[in-house]
Structure formats: C-alpha cells, structure tokens
Image 1 (cartoon, rainbow, N blue to C red):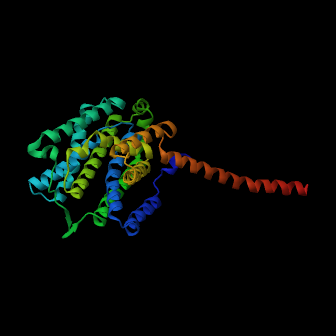
Image 2 (cartoon, helix red, strand yellow):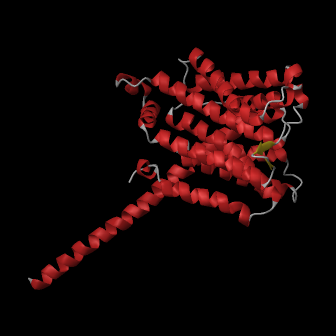
Image 3 (tube, helix red, strand yellow):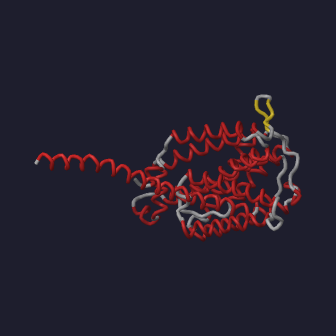
Length: 347
C-alpha cells in the first residue's frame, strides 16, 4: 500500500487526536508545559498552511513570518488604538494577509521554486522593516502593549487551560479543512502541479489559479495564528516575526514531511519538544544558550534532507505499510501451503 492510501481522510485519526488534545491538560497541569503546548498549536496552524503550499503546490515560502506578523499587528492596532472588539478583528486578521498574498501572487505569478522563495524572503524583510520604522502605528521596535484579552459570552479566556483549548479548537478546524482540501479535486490538482507543472498545464489544469489559492490560504492561516498570538501574549514586537521565525516554520514542515497534512502537525510538535529539552538542558549546562536551539534546528534540517528527504511521517508510514503488507502476504501464503501438503498426502 502506498502512502496515498495512508493519507486518505481517516476521521478516526482526527477523533483520536482530538481526544488526546482534550485529555492533555488533565494529565499535564504545569503552566510551563501548557504554555508551550499552546504555542505549539499556534505554530501548527502556520505549519499546516505552509505544508499545503510546499508539499502540494510545490512552492517554497520564506515569508510566512510576515503574514503571521500582519495578522498579529492588525488585531493589535484595531483593538488598542481604535477600541474594536477582538472578535470583529478576526476576519480582518485573515483577510489582510490573504489580500497581500493575492497581490504578491498576482504580480509574481510567473515565479516558482527558488525564485518565489527569494521573493517571499524579500517580503518578510520589508514587512519587518515597516513594523520597526512605522512607529506612529506599530510603536516601533519596542513593541505593541496592552492588547486586550478575549472574552466570550462574558467569560474571559485567560492564559492556561482556557486559551489552550481555544487555540487547539482552531487547529482542529484548520486540520479538518486541510484534509478535505487535500482529498478533493483541488488536492488532486495540486499534487499534479507538484509532480509536473508542465504536464498539469497540458492536461488543462489551471496551475496559476490553484497555486494562487493555496498561497492565499496559507497566508490566511498565518494571519489566524498571529491573531491568536497577540491576544495570548498581550504584547507583541517585530522581533517575533523575523526571518528566524520563517526558518522555524520551514523546519517544522521539512521534519514532519511536506507531502502530508499530518506530517506538518507532527513536525511542529517534535520541534516544540526539542525546544523544551534544549531549554531544560540550558538550566543545567551553561554552554547551552538560546542560540544553541538554532544550531539544533539547522542540524535537524541537514540530517532530514540527507537521510529522510520526504520527512518523518511519510517515511514512517511507508515503513509501517511494508510491515503490514508482509504480514498479510504471510497469512495468505499459509493456507495454500497447507492445502498443498494435504494433496501430497492423499496422492
């Protein structure tokens, strides 16, 4: 059985994952781990969108941090400066990054591969510079403070368990939406574009249209993550949305497997677990600093590209499938052997 068979939408897997999300705060009650789990959910939203863009549309983006920052600053400016409700700013935190992605994708529709990666890298640099220099609106490098908490039906969603559930609620929605896209006609078109854009065009697939759509969707996912970040942290700064953040998201997708929605999610969780381990070791060994974490991520990227270029999830799925197929072959062969032996005895 190929990986595509494993990737078919299995709602049982979604249900099991949802139950694990619900049970986690009941087992792990320390605020340190809950905070990291909440951040993992925020990053997972971005990684899933980037995974769709890389693994299915075959496009590399180094500017997801820009869309992430635009979503965060959109809600921050509107809620703090203009006094809007955070829930009213949610659609705008999705639409504005999506609109920017549309403009960028339309003007650079002929770019692909590394050329598109360089263009998105330039976008990230431009957005970060604007966030720092446009002090009258963004408050400059010092950051934006006083972002209001979320309230729902008179209940304040504080950091900890309430915000954890809110973030992962959105993660599960994004996961289900992405799985539906992948296993729809649009997903098949995206896979054909990834395999060969020329062949897809010759078969009548509107490659530009589909690449534009998935690019916009990935930007909107990043904007949603930025909205969640802003109302969790209560303060944001341009340092949160640098090129390093884009590389971190890229590492999550590459580690888990860009050709799988589940791979992007698993890669995010693994990267966050590695970050927690490095943080804990930093308290025991003085030579392990915050920069050491970036060294680990770089080493992971290098090893994955060399030994498991498809990512951990697709490779593990193929390995499990091969074991299961061997077992099924052995079971099928046993009755035939027994029948042959009985036939020989009768003769």
